Length: 481
Image (cartoon, rainbow, N blue to C red; front, side, top):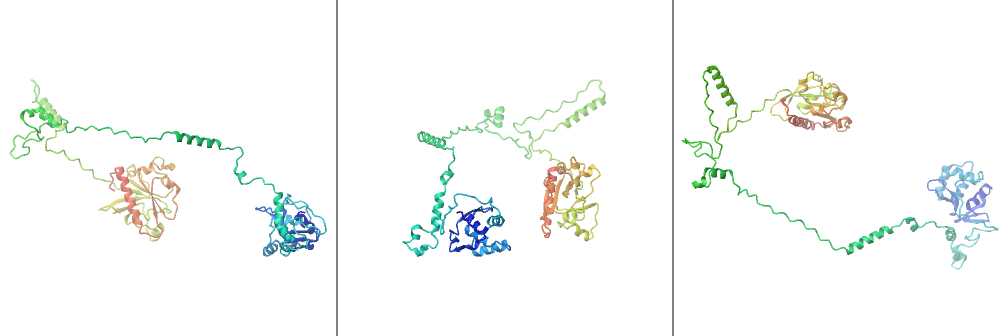
């Protein structure tokens, strides 16, 4: 008989006191004796889904009652070393054992059910009868020694009823799939490789011979000059392209170098026509003189062309724009010390020190300059086009509204591509703060400041002016920067 139904019969009938435990076996009165580890048909609804054994269900049934508390039962079961009924199974199992319900979704009937055995002292098949001596008492020649212990007998009976559906080899097989084609292809490739002649390494094509340039055999300008002048007949093998005695003291025949084109002939004398007024003759002579002056004079030997004119003097004071908001990292309160001495002070500190805000500030740049250079700093948009042309850099606050009133294409709508082509952009932020997402899309230089350490401020200021100088040099600015 199935251990679960047998236990339910005794619990629902109020005869649970007749069920006793002797060693590893559970005795149901004098009718049946089952091992405590016998598996029942009640399957746990927990994640593992294991079947409860008889010992776990018997211990649970003995703790049922009006004052039953699951926490107390769980503690006792752990101390007794028996399996515990899970919390989700407790209510359904209690209703089934007490006979309040006849069926449960957790019960799975199967070949593990034991056949009923009749008789006053009938026991489960494969187990020693009640009162029979144990294996140790029976000895090697007793019943226990011949049949084996109860667990082995139960295991043999369960294995005999099993139907093996799959094993390791059947799990690895794929029905309807075969690798014969792959093996045949592999054998064909191996056969072709065995009969193929050994491949010879490819030879590199020979390099084509390079004919000499013959530069020493060509006729040079000197040779052509000598042939023209008939130097071979005169017995002259070579001649230098310098005028004999050129520049020598007392030389009277200093002329153009040999081989050089002769100087142009002098202009013909002015011709006069009979009856021509003298004023018209003088005017024509002046036109001829002026035309001769406009022609470029031929380069004479030993005379260098005039040096290029020196670049024009730079003029115009550069303008640096800063944000007008008080929440910006830099504005008119603290931009002066940063660009003049390389010292950053928060806006709140400058206001607490009594710094007054002005619309325009003239700073003296000494970083990277032998002499101080004046820069104009402001947070007000210039009113004239000529002043906008002097704006060379801008410190960004990270918000597009800063450029809303600027007169460049796209600035009013937040498209600052043209704006940062005209001036250098800079953005300051603390190292522990995230960069504004809009700034990442702009063509600006990002500088990270430390909240505590101030010795790196001068490095940032120097880098700003270095970047600004490179930008203005690329733009070929004529401002005095």
